[in-house]
Length: 300
Image (cartoon, rainbow, N blue to C red; front, side, top):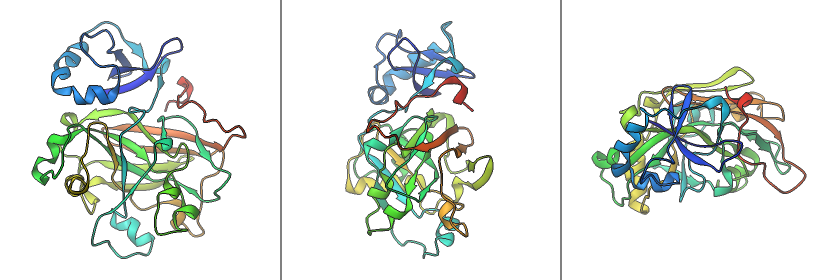
């Protein structure tokens, strides 16, 4: 199943089941929560009712809705660094002996097709296509064999990065946490629909030019290793999201480096999960963030 958060012109954000080119609103199903995190927590009880929703008659074309971040306020946004061999090689670094973790802040959460800001404070904005994991079941000290039971689903993500800020200090948090720099979606594809997540082709394009291409089988620390290890340090909860690492081909590794600029179009794709796409634009003069929505003509 594919579960989205969306809005229409005259209604508040709501959850929907994506089927082909349509979305089926879930709000009229008795007992279905209103928010994605609550739905994830209630999934064992809600799944059957949502499956029956596919037989319903109320369908809205995706071209008529605004797709929002699948989860508007994840409890945690954790991200893995240096997790594809080709990305490590292009960065001229040694393969890590231990998993390298950092966090992105809530202000990075952004809709899958909404514009990405080129901030005033950075001249080195880069793209990073990534598989995003959505935690489904609370857990601490999760055994690797049990990790699949704790995953709700998967998304496409773009770990947008201010490279100049990233490498000013040993800590990457600021360089990874500018406003709008964590778009993900376009919806959550449930884990049962994907099965093994380590077989998915992953790509990014800038202005139609292929920049990154790999497969999630190339992850150095795979999804199950990551979640098991992370859970040794912290309790993982429904709705937490994890960016799992990016393959080679980032702009910083080009010679000379080629960073994103206003007007650039960045597209990130993962097989079976869909695609997200965004135009880059200057940070607005007013200190307010544009609503994280997308108009129908911006959909790929």
